[in-house]
Length: 288
Image (cartoon, rainbow, N blue to C red; front, side, top):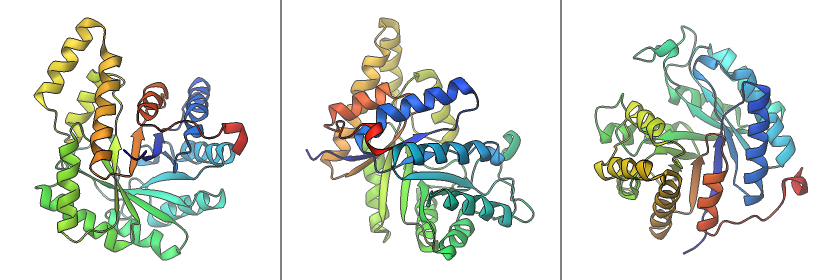
């Protein structure tokens, strides 16, 4: 098995303690030589400044590429592109372009009166600048706003046609979910990189709630396995084993890159990477 390349998602801290936690996570994972760190962006731009600052610190301290999330929610086109320009000024020219979650818990996305109507419009505007490497989201399970899987794939194809360079998927629990999606995308004429998003399960109860909210299929066997593991005090052991097996199955099927949703906690992600043969290559201080 060829060792995969990896990348890691983190979220911007809202407190000083959370800031130290993020730094500890970066120190632990940067030596694995990830392709990039991505930094999330809160709904409605609620972490806009925090995302900027976290991206800046990660970029400066690690010397690694940083991909900043950017959404269409709660801002005009001019304001959104100003945020992108500010990212570029600090050397962050990788953008993860997303529609974003509806504001204030609404059921449906409503564009800002002067904003981008959808992700494709945002991608086109970013591509027109000639400045950014653009990544987008993809959904191996049917997105809550999509009618079916064909609609998922059509939207992804439109994103690539608008100028996206790579897609990162929502997390999933079984390798076949991604592999079926990858094959369907190829059959639809999509030939750009689609990187699977991997969620090491830090807490099954929280992960399950999030999966239901975003349309990720939850196999019955997984519920049963975690119920038993929690009773026996083996939650983390099961989570590590299942995530490692999922990643190994993907790599065996030709997947070369994995993107981990770390939730700003390094241990489980690092253990899975180690099991896959992804081991430290540098220290953070070596590239700072």
